[in-house]
Length: 400
Ligand SMILES: *Cc1c(COP(=O)(O)O)cnc(C)c1O
Image (cartoon, rainbow, N blue to C red; front, side, top):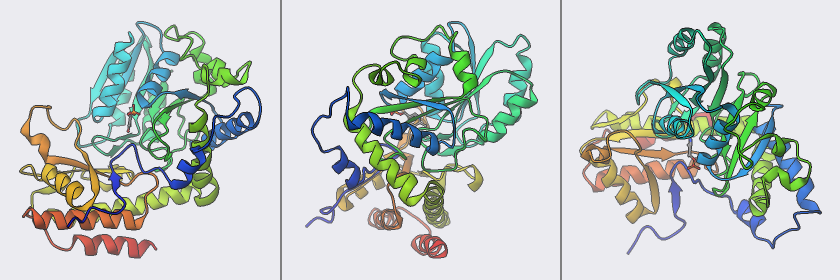
C-alpha cells in the first residue's frame, strides 16, 4: 500500500505549482513571431507586469531565470569598478552580491545574518561614509527565500534619502512578486527584478526587469551593458522581436498571459496578497505549537519580519531532513530543503527545511501539508507540541 498515490504536491519555494489553466494555455503550436496575435498579447502582458509591481516603470522580459535577471539589473546599473552596497539577509542576497562582483563591480556587503531583516540605519551609515559618492546602487532582497526574512523596502528607501545619497534602490522581488505587498513606485524602487516561476505561477524560463525613469537614464552610461542584457532596446524596441533580444519566449508568454489574468483580473492582486498572509499565519501557528514540545522553531522570530510566501524553520537532531523524506515518500508532499543556513559539510544542514506557500496555493494545500508534517512527526517520533493543526485551522477559520 502507498499513501502517496494521488496528485503530488511540490511545496518548495520555486518552481511552484503551475495551474492547469496556465499549462493548457501553453499547449499549442508555435505562433508567428513577426505578425498576428502574439504582438498585441505581449504588449498586454507587459502592461500587466507593470500592474503586478504597482508601477508605471518600463519592464523588459528576458529569456532567463532569476540569476539572469540579476545580471540584467547589474549590467544596466554599473560600469566596471563602480561600487554596490548589498544588504545580505540570506543566501539569495549573498548570491546577488557575488553576481555583481563576478561582473566587475566593487561590492560592499553588509551582512545582517540569517535571522533578521536589514537594518536601514546601517545602510544609511554606510551611505553616509561614502563621501565621494562612489556607490551607484543599494541592492536589497525583498524576501530572501533562504531565510524567509522580508526586508522593509520603504524603510531602506527612507535610509537612502536620509543619507542624501544619489544611489539607486535595486530590489530582488523574485520570491515576493504576486505574493506580498510590493509597490515599486510608492516605495521609490528604481530597479526591480523577478522571474516567472514563483508567485507568477509559470514554469522557469523568464527573467523580468523593471527600471524607473531615473534608472533608465542612469543605464545609458552603464558600461557593463551588453547587446543581450541592455534594457533600452527591449523597453523601446524598433521591431517587436527586439523586446526579447531575439526569438520571443512564445509559450511562456501564453502562460504568463493566463497567469496574470488569474492573478490581476480574477482574484485581484490585493486579494492574492491577503491569501498568502493567511496561509503564512496558518503555517506559523502550527510551528509555534510544535515548538512548544520539541526542538522546533521558525527561523525569523518577529512575525512582521517574516515572508508570507515561504517559511523557513529548524527541526533539530536532523529532524528536518527525516521529515522531508517521509513526507515525500509516504504522503506525496515535497518540502523545501534548507539553503545557506550552515556550511554545506555541516551535519546540522539536516536541521533546516522550508515550506512554500507561494503562488497557486490554497487553504487545503497548506492545511494538508501541515497535517502530513504532523503525521510524519508522529511516525518518526520527532518530539513536538500538540495542537498544531487546531491552531492552523483556527487561523483559516478566522479568515474565511
Ligand atoms: C528563486 C530566487 C532567485 C533565483 O532565481 P532562479 O530562477 O533560480 O535563478 C533569486 N532571488 C530570489 C529571492 C529567489 O527566491
